Length: 141
Image 1 (tube, rainbow, N blue to C red):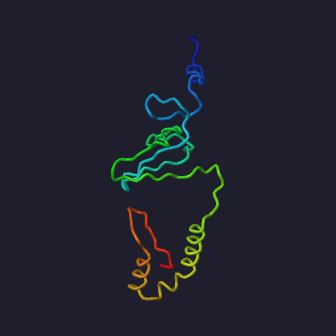
Image 2 (tube, one colour; image 1 turned 90 degrees about the horizontal axis):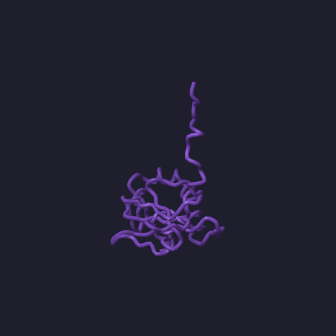
Image 3 (tube, rainbow, N blue to C red; image 1 turned 180 degrees about the vertical axis):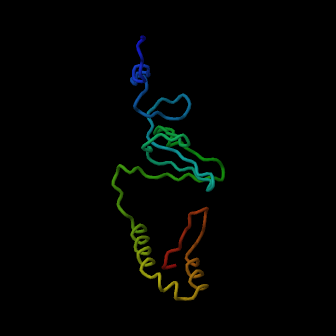
């Protein structure tokens, strides 16, 4: 009987493939530091820290290409901060958290306050909308 080769013996040696993810740009071999994702429904390009896993619909970029990134006309670029540095909450973050806690504490008031006025009152704080994202006015204004 001939020798039977298993999948481990016939596999390509792993030292040929680099464990470091590289920039997705053509002819760029630098290590990737950020991941670019497009949200077509919102016409937005999101550039954030390097994703844990390489995804087929995302692009890994090196530091130089991530800094020079531009989006097509009419699109927005959202740059997410790197999670390696501990971020301190800003005043806006704390205010948003306090507002969310206040809102969660009074669901009975909204339901008992009359069907039409409760929904209209909630929309009066909305300043703008883009897709599923909302911009809210500050309670002081």
